[in-house]
Image (cartoon, rainbow, N blue to C red; front, side):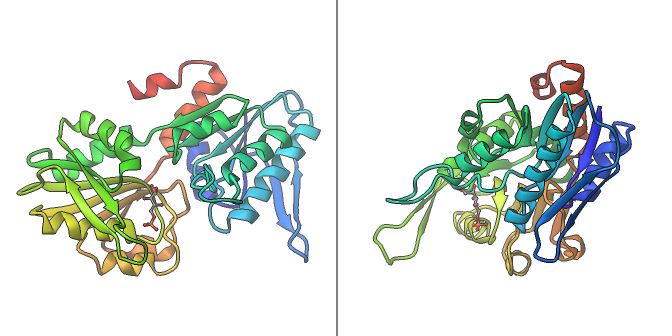
Amino acid sequence: MKLLAGNSNRPLAEAIAAYLNAELTRATVHRFADMEVFVEIHENVRGEDVFIIQSTSFPANDNLMELLVCIDALRRASAKRITAVVPYFGYARQDRKSGSRTPISAKLVSNLITQAGAHRVLTLELHAGQIQGFFDIPVDNLYSTPLLAPDIAREMGTEDLMVVSPDVGGVTRARGLAKRLNAPLAIIDKRRERAGVSEVMHVIGDVRGRRCVLVDDIVDSGGTLCHAADALLEAGAVSVQAYVTHAVLSSGAVGKITASSLDKLVVTDSIRPTESVRVSHKLGVLTVAQLIGEAIHRISEETSVSSLFD
Ligand code: R5P
């Protein structure tokens, strides 16, 4: 087995390699002056089972291009099997036509990865499970529940706990976590009654006296979580924390979360945490290195990946 790392999240790739007791394959991934990507692999990979680790996070297009160019280099170097390990699969939110004459970019990205030469994909907490069907190659979509649930139980306890989905789209994910924690589930229904009127948050479920934990796949601007926290407190919750897998945290988001009514936000390192995330007293980071490392081990040994979630 060979592990190759792109530039998007080198610390995570190193931690995965450490879990697997392996070295990262020597390679250089760099840029020409006009920002074209150039990849050179300095070890023989002929006939090898190769895993290329690269999140397509900010800068999304550069990181995606790096992934594609690495796959192409591996294919031309006669790797036997290439697995694109994409802890954060960018473009996933563009998974349907959101209006007339708009793209389905998640499908386009799936086509690009397949056409570049990947034989399989390993990813984490896809925005929508159906994206697996955009690929005609095997896709293993890992869930972060086995990582988040024990941390929630340890940090918050389970008494008076209520798991909350911040939108209707995230109910399946929140239900899975609630089941594991043996806690009830509430849902926030965001609605814009009329165009131009701000969104109203309806809390479905009785959160009075509850310590709420919001669970989501992505935190981007932070707006969803901050508004949800306010709505829950208004509805009688005693406190609100949030657990989110992918910390996109675009500009201004960390400040917004720090100033919000959320007690704490815990994210994972599927996207490399920025300095502001690392120093914030309101943010915590869990590593997905063992989870992804174990899935890589099982794929390479051709044993069950789904049993990781039993
Ligand atoms: C949306 O469907 C996703 O699951 C997240 O809720 C959303 O991407 C969060 O975005 P933001 O932090 O900008 O509100």
